[in-house]
Length: 555
Ligand SMILES: [Ca+2]
Ligand SMILES: [Ca+2]
Ligand SMILES: [Ca+2]
Image (cartoon, helix red, strand yellow):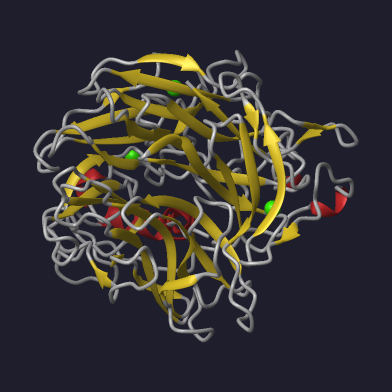
């Protein structure tokens, strides 16, 4: 689902700018925290009536998951993953079985079902079975699933898929998991890992859990082997005002069936979390979003998350440049360190254009483009961490009308997140309005330590109207990258069947406002990079516009 704090900026920046112009930067500006308008708008699906492939699906006799269809293709080129119909799939995540690199599970948002889509291969991506997942137990209120993420738990022999299930009125947002005992073909009804308190708890009033991520400690030498960690954002609101959004954590030692009581882990740091909504002393780092956990070989757990409270990062006349923070646990998630800063971002109130929904976007696009960076622990070096992100530091920023030339950056820590390198640009040097690289995902080859970053890339088109997918790789350490184009055709987000911006965006009426908030990359033990992304190459001829599907490639 994903609420983004940046969406509130437009509503309050005038007030805050006035405050800043009248007071020193050190003074705490007042901010009225309002709901983020986070719901996905209904899709314009009525124009699409013709399906393709096997849309009927087979309700499984043993479990409530549904097998819809099969796809095949050449992973050394590109594989179209969707065969369930014309409605969009986006926001793909990919997980590789640590014990078998040819066994992988991809998941995505699925607009043809209540919930998420699963895609499972046992032959390195040449053929996939795919279907619907995140189904509620009989008798429970049907809810919408979103925010797909999947992990392999080698010790317990299961695949665990996490999603956010909520009611369509924005209430009862619970973090749930679906468990598969056969490698990702049949999935059970969901287990509630974090209960937001029932239907009376809504995103605008009460506790609403959002944007979870999941990972498993699969190292047999770790003291916490077989423990699965789940983190998310706990949005607390009172009568439409968000009061806090700390990161919460729970973990499971039985393959996802039972979970510990959730607790907050984002902590406090008076030097880094200076802005406090409604006043109060600097300290609590509780305005957070988009947490990602990762586990080092020694069992140390690290969690990164974005935070907007560091006023030292805000240039004169603007607010809410974000920072990424990290916390760590050396006792299996029982206690957590004070947060330290990974990197400061150029993504404040005057750094990006806004789309028709008030979301941060890219020049000449309407796609919402939040800074969803991820953290990964090097599986070969305890204490070495990589973090990938993008921002507009190389574009026109800190002005009333920003122009994007976003780049992807990597930072490295060799001391468990206490200190970080300066950002190294991952993509090739470029210039020009709209020459954007965004939505990076970083992973490490467990056989060599090579670090790779996959991302969306507008450099392949001289007009930057279309985008492709790129994989950049560096030797261990992440200091010098070589890049290759992974996508074999251009994506057309300015000519989209779905999520169109409409007349509110003159000249960009058919521009898509949404194609997910991240893409996926995962290395297998065979040293192969597995990339999956939201692709918009497929033309829907009756409208002359393009569809939105998941694609896969192996390099
Ligand atoms: Ca489906
Ligand atoms: Ca800025
Ligand atoms: Ca760029």
